[in-house]
Image 1: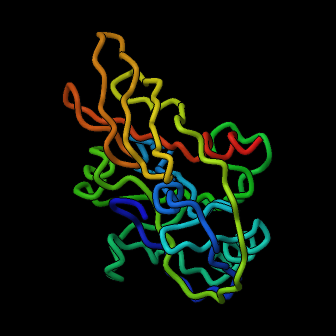
Image 2 (image 1 turned 180 degrees about the vertical axis):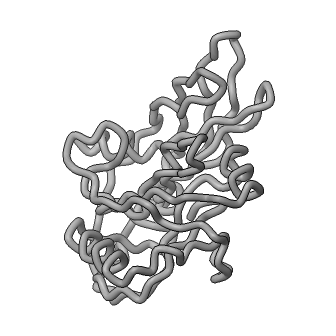
Length: 224
């Protein structure tokens, strides 16, 4: 589960199944960060759910189940059901874009449900910019069907952070033999500074800023 999350609440009936067994890294593998932010419009974009990736409850969904859930959510017109930390208290934020990522998408995981959320509240937008709000978390109802999913978790996963202060970083994070997230570090920025990584979706602060990142793609690519 994300350190801090937005909640898209619905009573969808799509199928979800617990991964049994799942590698010990079930929780960190589920981290999917906010990947794009439009400063002028105060809109953030990210995956709500990606196919075949265990979430913090050990559940996963198929591409078809995710599509059914996403379409049902939009059909009901409940695009203002956005809260913070699963409080079920409206924030004034609302969904302005919703789509299923296609194969070859340069930013989002194929077949994942992606939303763009408008955040009018300046205080909440400040939390997004600081990295304190750094991902989406689904909250709803579903039927669990027993299933098995297996992942080959590499010792080191590499990628690239988002762009902040006119630069981005290469990064690498490590996992133990048991799949435990051990953290990592970015490569040097333009002036040589680096960021430590101790959490699943955002770096530690250096020079007054942080960077978001996602290692989910690295895990998926490692499956060959």
